Length: 176
Image 1: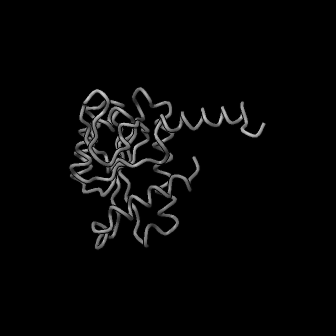
Image 2: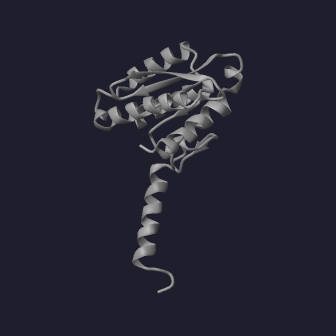
C-alpha cells in the first residue's frame, strides 16, 4: 500500500474535522472497524495491517502537529450488527474519526455517523455513500446525505466509467 495515498486522507480527516477535539488533547484518538476474521478477511487483514502501520509511520514522523495518534481498532468479522456495536464502543472511547471497511456496514452506519458528525473513512466505494445532502432516487426512495463518509478514491461506478472511457479512447482514438 502506498503510504502517501493513505496518509493524505487520514491527515485531512484528523485536521479538518478534529481540530476542536484536538486542541487540548495530548493524543489524537482514532478508531478502526476492520474485518480480519470474516468473509472479506482475505484482503481485510492486509488493509487492517496497512492502516495500523500508517498510523505508526505518522507517529514515528512526529505525529500531527507534534501530537501522537492513538489508533484503536476492532475486528467485526464482517457482521453488520457487530460493526454497530464496535462503532458505539469507539464513540464511547471519544475517538474523533473512524477508519472503516465494508459496504454493508458502512451503509448501515451512515445515518448514525452523519447524526453524530463522526468522520468515517471507509474502504467501501459504494455510490450510495457519496452524496453530502439528502437525495431521492429514480424510484422515489429517499436517501439521507452522507457528508461524514469520506473516501480514499472515487466510487465504484465512477471507477468503472473511467476504465470504460480509457478502453474506448485506446480502442478508438479521436485523432485516428
